[in-house]
Length: 389
Image (cartoon, rainbow, N blue to C red):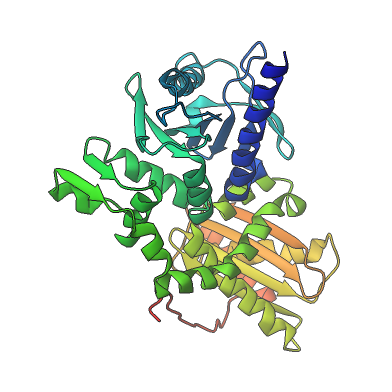
C-alpha cells in the first residue's frame, strides 16, 4: 500500500509541473486536467482544447534501469493511453465532460476539432536515447523530457507558437534525424531557420549538434527579443482578465489569445503607447485602431474610471462598428478599453461577414454624431522579432 501511494504521489507531482507550465502558455480557460471518461476513469493527464485544436498529454515519472534506460513497457503504456484517449474522443465520440475553474462544465465537441496533437512527457531522471517523435497505431506522438517540456513551454508560450512547432515536427517524421543533446537543439534550428524545417528537404540524413541551443541563447538578437517581449505579457494579462469585461468572454479571450508572441508584443506596444499618450494629455479619451492580419484591433483609453462603465463600453462598441467599415475592411474587429486610473478592461468582439449599404449608413451616422475616426492621424512603425543590435 505504501509503495502504491508513493507512486501515485510521484505521478501527481509530475502532472502538476506540466499543468502549471501549460496554464501559463494556454491559460486556465483552455486547460482541462485529468478529464474523466464516461464512467469516471481518467481519459488523459491533460487535455488542451483551443478553437479547432486539441492537445492530448500523458505524463509519466519514470526511473532509469541499470543500463540508463526507461522500461519499454512503461514508455509504451504512455503511448497506448494517448491512442486510447484519441480513439475515445474522435472515433467512438464518447460524451466526455470537461471542467476547469473558469469555464465550468461543458461537453467536449469533437466536430469542432480539425487538428489533434499527442504528447508523451517522460519526467524521470533522464534518458539520453529518447526519440523526439514516436508512434502508436500510425499516430504521431511527440516525446518530451521534463527538461524539454520546461524549455519549449516557456520559449513557445502561446498556443499559436507552440502548435506551429508541433506541426513542423510532424512534417519531418520520415526524415532520418540524429539529435545530439536534447530536443532543445532541434528547437534552436527551427527558430534559427525562421520557424520551419523547410531546409531539411534537401538532405537524407540530418545531424543536429548539441551546442545549438546554448549558442542561440547567447546571440544578441535573441537576448534583444526576450527584452522586447516583456511588454507583450501585458496582453497576456488582458487575456487572463477577459472574463471580467464580457459576458461572452470566452469568444473574446480566444481572439485575444490567437496571436503569437511577436504579434502580442506589437499589440501591447500600441496599446500602452496610447495609454501613456492619454495620461500625459488633457484629452478625455483617446482612440486607436490597428489592422493586423485579418483582424482590426481598436483601443479606447478614457478618463472614465467607473467600473462597470456602460458609457465606456458603448463607445467601444461604436468604435468597432465604425472600424469594420474602414479600410482594409477586416471582417473581424476586437476592441479593448480601459480607464486612466482604474485599470479595468472592457472588451468587444465583432464579426461581420458582409458590409451592406445599411451598415455603411449606420457607420456614417455614428461618425457624424461622435466624430469617430473622421480625421485619423496615420502613423507607421516597423518591428523585427529578432532585432539586430
